[in-house]
Length: 528
Ligand code: NA7
Image 1: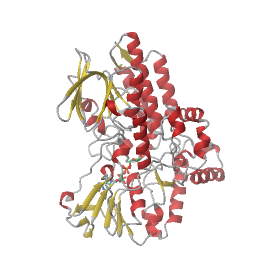
Image 2: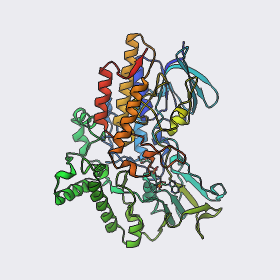
Image 3: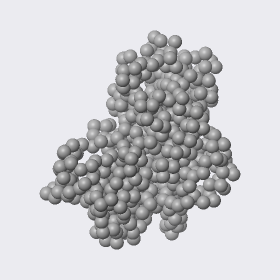
Image 4: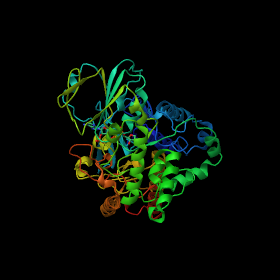
C-alpha cells in the first residue's frame, strides 16, 4: 500500500489549491516544496518592482467566496509582497502548512507498472510512494541561466531576479548593470533607476510595453465583490481568463481605419495586457498586428526625448504580442534620466564579464552590481528537471522533440501523473489563476470519478494525445506567434526544440473541450 494517495509537487498558487481541494475530498495528500515557504514564483521573484501584470481583482482565487470578500487588494496591479501575503493568508486560513514538506526538492519520479505506484525521490534520497502525482511545478520556475564568460570572476555583487535576496539590497550610490529587458528586467529597471548612482541597461531585443496605469484599486474592488460569481464566470469563458472591463472585441477587418485606431486608444487608456485584445485577430491578422505595433512605436517616440535612443528601444523585428508583452509603470521615461544608459546588444554584443564589469567589443564598463533578468526555461523546464521514469523510458526523452500531452494534463505512458497548467494547455497565455483553478478542479473530479468506480489508473490514449499535439501545433500555426524567437517557442534555451508550447485557443474554448472530455466518460483517456 502506498504511503499517500496523492503527492503534489510545489506549494505555489496551484499546489496550495490542489492540496486544499483533495483534502476536502478525503484524499491523503502531501505537498513537497523546494523552498522554505509557500508562494512558488511569488516567493522567489522578490526583486525590486516585482508586480503582477494581471489585475488584482482577477489574479486571486475564486474557490473561496469568503476569502474573496475578506481580502482587500490595495493596488490595481498588486506588487510581489502583497501577493505573497495573500498566498500566506490562504495557507493559514485553510491550515495548509501541516501537509507541506518545505525545503524538500523532488529530483525523481518512478512509476512501477506492477504495483501501480509512483516512487517520489527527494534531493536527499528519501523515497515516498504514492498512487497519484500532481506536478504543480510552475511554468516559469526554472531559470534560463544563459552562459556569460567570466561571470564567476566578477568581483562586485551579482543578483538574479528570480532569486533575489530576502534582505534589502542597498543599491544607493552604486553603478548597476541590468541584463535583460523582459518583464522582470523592465520592472527592476523602473524601480531602481531613481536610487542607483548609474544604471546601464543591456538590451538584446526591445519589448513592446504598454502602460499599467497602476494606482490605488479604489471602488472597483467593492463593486466587483458584489458580483464576483458572475464576474469569474465571464473570465472562465473568455480568451485570456481575465476581462478587459466592458470593452468589446471587434474583428479588425470589420473596422474603418479611424475606428481601429480608436480601439487602440481605448485599450491604451485602459492599460495593461488588454491592449493585445484590441482586435479579436490581433495575433492572426498581420495588418491588425502591424497597426497595433506601430501604435506602440509612436508612443515610445513620444515618451523618450532622444530620438536615437527611442529608436533603439523600439521593437521592429517581431509581431506585437508574439513575445510576452510587458506592462510598465514608467519604463520608457526612465531613459530620460541622466543616470541611465542603454547598451544595444545587437550593435555591441557582450563578449565577456570581467572582474570589474562587462565588456562589449573593445569597451569595458565598470560596475558594482550586475543584475541578471534573463528569463526562464518555460513550461517544460521544471518537469524536465525531475528524472521522471515509467520503468523503461524517461519523460524528458519522450519529450525530446517537444512536449507530448493530452490537454496539457497527462502524457501517454506515464499513468497517474498530472501537470497543472502543463505545456499544451492555455497556461502562460492566460490569467494563471483561472487556468490553475480549472485544472485543479478537473483533476480532482477525475480522482473522485476513479474512486467511485473502483479504478486506480488513468493515462491518455496515444491516439488522443497525438491528436492534441497536432491541434496545439496547427492552431499556433494559424497565428503570428511562431514568427518570434520567444520562450513560448523554447527559443531562449540553447538546444531546446522549437515548438509552440501553450495552447492558443483560449481558456473558454479549452474549458469546453475539457468539460466535454469529462462528460464523455473521459474520452481519450484509458481508465483501468
Ligand atoms: P523574459 O521575458 O524571457 O526576458 C528575458 C530577457 O533577458 C529578454 O530581454 C532576453 O532577450 C534577455 N536575455 C536572455 N538571455 C540573454 C543573453 N544571453 N544576453 C542578453 N540578454 C539576454 O523573462 P522575464 O523574467 O523578464 O519574464 C518572464 C515572465 O515573467 C513574463 O513574461 C511575465 O509573464 C512574468 P531576448 O528577448 O531573448 O533577446
